[in-house]
Each structure stands twice: as C-alpha cells, then as structure tokens.
Image (cartoon, rainbow, N blue to C red; front, side, top):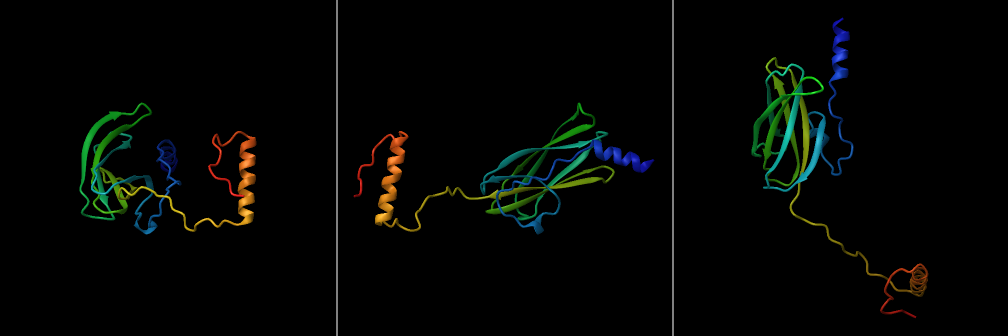
Length: 174
C-alpha cells in the first residue's frame, strides 16, 4: 500500500524537464544535480530571478543558492510570498540576486529543504561573457579567375531575370 501511494505522488508532482538546448559547452563534472535552466549574463552585472518551490502541505522551506564555479560570488536570497496553488499544494517564491565577477560558466546550485530534512537540488547554468559582440572577417581574399568572372556574370543575369538586386553592379568585369 505504501508503494502504491508513493507512485501516485510521483505521478502527481512533476519536476521541470532538463533542457536539451544549452548552446554553450559546460563541464558536466561541475553539475552536481539536474540542470533546471540556463542563460547568458555579463560579469559584474547583477541579475535577478525568481525561483518557486512547490510542496504539498505548505511547510516552510529554506532555499539556498551557491556558485560551484566561484565561491566568492555575491548571492542574496529574499523570501517572497507563499500562496496556495490552484492545482494543489503550496508555492513559495524566492527572489535571487547574483553578481558573478568572472567570465566563464557559473554553476548555481539551488537547494530547497523543508523542516523534515527533505530536499531538492537543481543547477542553473549561467554563461558570463564580456560585452564582446561578434564581428565578420574574411579569411582569404577572393581569387579572381576567368571561371569566377563567368560565374559572377551568370549569377547577375539570373538575379536580374527575377528582379533582384534592385541596383546594377557598379563595375562589370569582362
């Protein structure tokens, strides 16, 4: 009977899925639990997010955040409102302010623990990068040969046939 009850609770309370679209490389050995979310920030710029913790009976929950990449990262957690969830249970909100100082991937380990010692841990991945916009460059200068000139003329003829581009080339190579 206890096993059946436990299975029923696990099917009712669902944890968010692990994201599969993380666009930057990270060290899987630094991830101490499942990844909850990721985003990009700048060093020495404070970002704020709200984390919600749900439990069935509304027991008071302690929520902590630690940076596994840089233990000196200033992190402040403010307890928000606790309210009843229309789908059942209670939701406690926490507002978190983090100011990472170093570039790199920060592994923010979030821990929620209730008064009975039951806990949940998840990781928030934060890629900190300086304000470094992308730039375009050409690795090799174009090589002009008779074949490339004929190919360029053919492309211009096809483009002109379809009305594109709106302007004619300023110089046509013969």
